[in-house]
Image 1 (cartoon, rainbow, N blue to C red):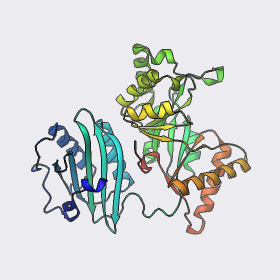
Image 2: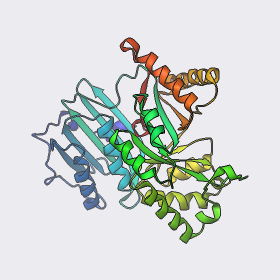
Image 3: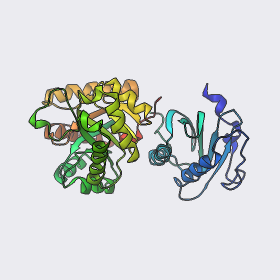
Image 4: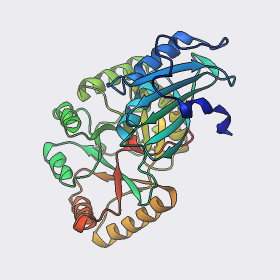
Length: 363
């Protein structure tokens, strides 16, 4: 189905024959071409070596931005590429790719109602690459670990001792939150935020929660968003939540919250349980959404059983996601020992990913 959108000529494209950013050919009928040109210019910044060119066309009936580069398209370049699309209002619908030796072709089907009612395609062709996303073929389970409600420097240092890519979801509204976000970025890890949402039955230990009444009041949700942004001290890539059994059943409250998070350039969402309302609302509002496979906790025997199930899920689906409380020392010790045993004698039977590096599915 998607093959008809792939321009065969791009497979033979090299940087000497590719049109420059200033001489792209525009077919008639492309809506808001200027916006596509701006986005394409921004996408070229993913490769600072400037060994790239782009071409905008509508030969197949749909807008297509084709980019050709001499360079890599690793998880880092892919993450930055998708970030630019997300921040410009594009909703990712599907991703396909074909790899061969040191070259790769990637096709992204997106939508953006402000530019076109039809799908908009972005195609990337890279050659002479030393790193391509993903590591193909995938011969080992891939696992993303989300460390939930990170609150202290000690917790960060302890989790960093695992020595693998991690996603840290911050506990907001604390004195240390902004500094922790900065430190996470310095370590080359990924920062998210965990929000506590109103449950059906509240108790004192729930702490500060965003209530339905607050979310449905324009002034109060604006104040909440401002306080959240101030607390974080900068951008985070995604969000998840705790509690929320009452909140997530109200689509209007979800939309009000997610609208403010999108304004803050948050583009990824992890549903911690099985709430379809939250997942579907997030997708409609242009978040790239994932569902957690397991919350990792318990005693040693329980952790071993959970880990075995996680490996089975990852082997079957290509990857698995687990959340773990930042202050859960038992889970941390188990994971550290498991990873060290896996790395012993150079063996690496598990590949760890940050959330933004996970394979993209239909949104």
